[in-house]
Image 1 (cartoon, rainbow, N blue to C red):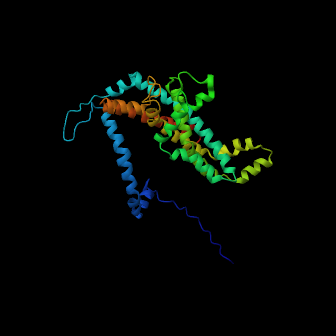
Image 2 (image 1 turned 120 degrees about the vertical axis):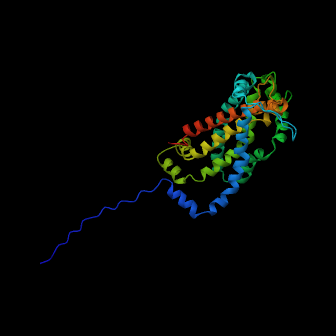
Image 3 (image 1 turned 60 degrees about the horizontal axis):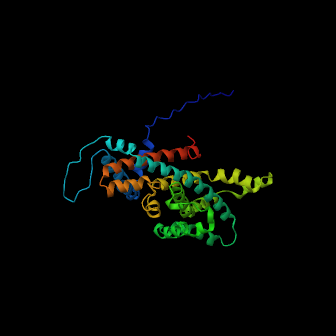
Length: 315
């Protein structure tokens, strides 16, 4: 007669862990990580965090620059600088100008960069030469390239001679309606090579099997581009959108050189250019700092919306 033994299963309950305990233990066990990350953290603190914090401080004070060793009162003025900036027609015009710039530059940059990158990815011969050709304007100094652009678009330039009676009057860069669109086209052309490289890097991760499957299902090249390429490079598109927005928000050199400092009648002035005029030329750094803080807030909002609606953030 055999005895049967019944074993009762014992439930094992994991001991609760404090939130973040795993992360703290990982940091304690890898102190070398602090050493490697310290230079970058110092760089962020010195180059970004401190200037931004100091700009916020300046924006709430009647601040102005003095000679070394000279101390003068810098009274707290609250939101006075912000109120003055938001009601200043020149500042509102500058923000409107950069809005026009972004409406032209950002879509053109995304579409042209993606299309050209797709074509370059399929090129067999002279691929390196073509990539360098597109990237070269981005590497060239804006000051040098502006001279070429002025030669093309001035009153007697090549573009106006080619257009003949269709050429605008006044000409491109002294026309209130065409000055900012002309600058947007210039910035798009100059920076296109950089964004093409970003898309080319993203296209290397797209499997050729996807295109073959789409072709087997009867999809044309255009349908393959829309249904395979565009979704596959969506993270790169989000990056291009954010970088293009940040570039537009920091617009300074182009209007300063192409239109003589925001002309005609402020039609090509940018917020950064107005900050320079108010803070450096007119000696109102607190006022200029308020404009800068408003610009940072606007750029963050636009970048978040681009990240959200372009598919970069699914949460």
